[in-house]
Image (cartoon, rainbow, N blue to C red; front, side, top):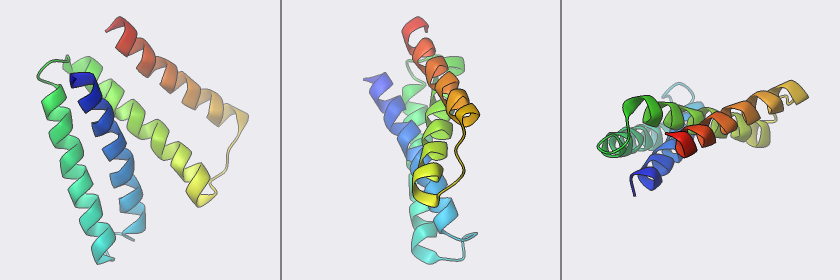
Length: 104
């Protein structure tokens, strides 16, 4: 269960990052509210996962999910440039997250 909580926390990190972009520097009310709520939820769930998962592993997995998911969302939702190098780097992050889960 701690790993599921950690994965959900990582997805919340993706959502708050997207909300931050949509909030236009906290100038738009509802996207700003969404950002703050998902940020708080992400941190709360990370804290819950840390009860059973070492900080070195949990934080790395959390940021890996957030960074990879946000990069993919940027490509898909905001037409950000994609290259073979970018895809390769994202695959390295995913491989690291999987490795931490399997070996951690």
